[in-house]
Length: 311
Image 1 (tube, one colour):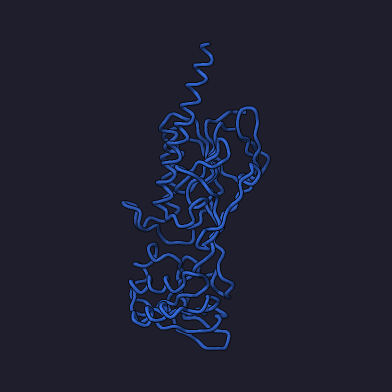
Image 2 (cartoon, rainbow, N blue to C red):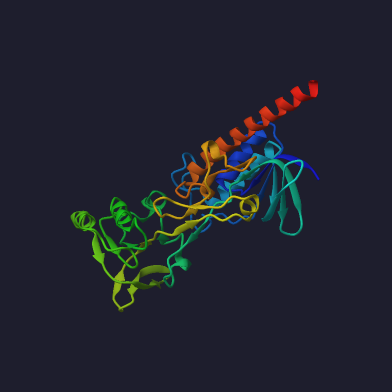
């Protein structure tokens, strides 16, 4: 079995950027990826300088091609388990394959847990959106309904007000507004509709509005939600690392120090698996940082081995 310098789990922006950095450092690197990126439903990646509007699939295809030019390897599959061996870390793949690496980087992203509202999932990434910096320009000047479901719902409504003068906050399951929040929303012309939301209604393959549990219909063109981002990795679980809750109640991710180094020897993380707020460009930057840190770690190990061999 070939021993790789680094195994990267996850071939999104973070994983491919790390792998590219390592391959350019003349490290043997393999990326394990299932081909199901978090942003697959979106029409384009935004806020990524020189890549604005590129489809997620095209971005990843270009990243894979760049990695291949430097000798990096892509394995299409899912990492199911991990264990330590005398040589490093062994990864078990679905289908029975195995890989062994001296170092491991997990960049497998996260899953967005959407509020339990009928019709929401079907429109996800189209006219049901979550991030104003990712989608705000595309939904500018449209009728936006912000679905309240977390501690930042009022803030999200104020944020989307920057892109449209027609914003409604539907409180749904969010905590009652404070006096200060209500005053700010009113001052900015954001209408508040109380009561649980039962469904997103669609007409002509477009969101038409939201139906409340009491039957009230609120016409809207776009729904902004606050999903709960949750990172989960069987590989990290096997090695002894568990996700922790975000301090502001915005999901769960794996803790890490500078450049993504975890408390587990030889294990790094990058991208949304450790930072629930990271957009694509930020995840890519984290991948570069992690890749450089891993290479330096290996440089030191290689030097120490050479010193020991000379004695």
